[in-house]
Length: 156
Image (cartoon, rainbow, N blue to C red; front, side):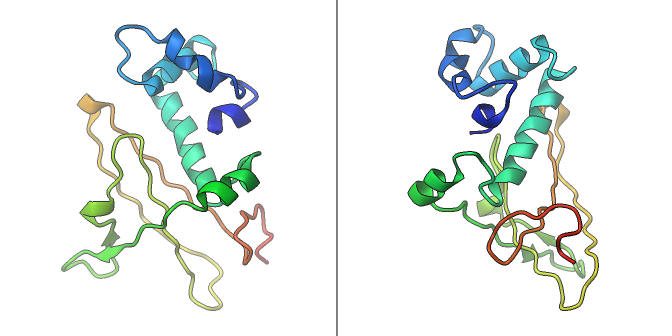
């Protein structure tokens, strides 16, 4: 979906990525990272793909894709993750181990501000393992009462 919606890739990209893979590339994600760097879409293939995938994950919060209506009708919306308090750390929460994202995974957590709140403050701390090319992104997507993303100061 993310490749198809991008004018840099198009819907045909998903069909041909496997045929463009080198023997050293373990997954289609590695191939996309290399191709994106070769095409000048990002300077560093791994970091650039991470940014690209992070944008995709943020868009999944509201299924913000050109084909959102057929996707919603067939698959519904992504499952929301829950948070659990971290023992001994007031106001600190984490994703339960059972919901921790695997490689190229992501979590969507619904945060509900207190009535009358004019801002939110969140301190994200992810795990980073450079030998595994691990990386993480955090996004906040404001959603209206109908489940659609809002931009700018549409919230009032």
